[in-house]
Image (cartoon, rainbow, N blue to C red):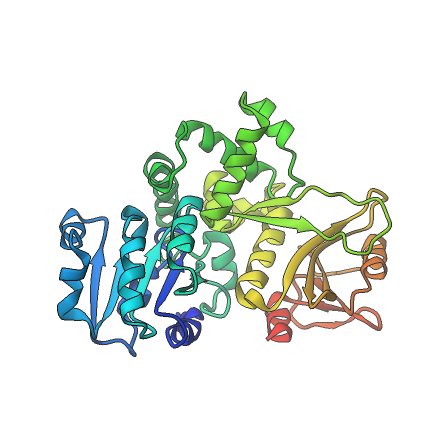
Length: 380
């Protein structure tokens, strides 16, 4: 069963604060459906800037908008017409009503830079992620297929996999260039396959550069670009007030586990369950659910020392580590020694082992074993 997208209340609040609201996220994540179904905005004009006919309507932006000055204007695929930001600035300054524009786009560094330069103080950005566990009921299906609506809702696992394979193909062959990454898409495909096979590993640009036959700056550029386009999650290491020798490189994940499994050609849960990637897939799924649902409540890090102490995820608020989280694909969790040390090092307030149990219980005075749904309830 589908529930209301979590972003709706945040979007409505932003529309009371900013003249323009930007909703960013990867293609096919549900941005268009979301805004078309806004119950609070029945009087609206929608333009899809992928259509030449809709772009032509904005050849003279002021002339087009004049008869619609009291309506909500929704501009979809805004990256197709980035030059419009400067004109929107003048229009907004003449009429500072909040909630006048909603701009939808698949982010790229260039898009964000242009809009930020032109609409500073006039636009607020929110991210629409794929479905997460507060929006759907089937955790196993969400893990296997990922949260892109057409993948999650497919009638069969095979149809879901076919959709994801075509999504990746279109993204590489078409969307990369539109978003501003001018490169050989086959190289980026190999880059993604390498990332999939090293899911959640410490980022090593030299290894990627050597394997792909390109330079270190180029692979770092790919990493930054795909992170900005919401396909990758990069988790930085925690290093504040720690005197030990720490691992200082980030970790890199493919954010949507459905995309991860498609890259690895894993169609069913049975296939996934027999693969060595299982643990890394579960870890990245849990991390993405926590970050998507908790959003801006926390800052997110991992922790690892050269002596072996480590923690999969730290949730930090106002400079304090509120939660240290270890993620295990097991029904019989134990407290790793390295996890206890990481809690001591970071002065973490609470420790949690996320595992595949039905009901949580205490493992020690300040460390609990919880399933993922229980942790989400704790973080609410």
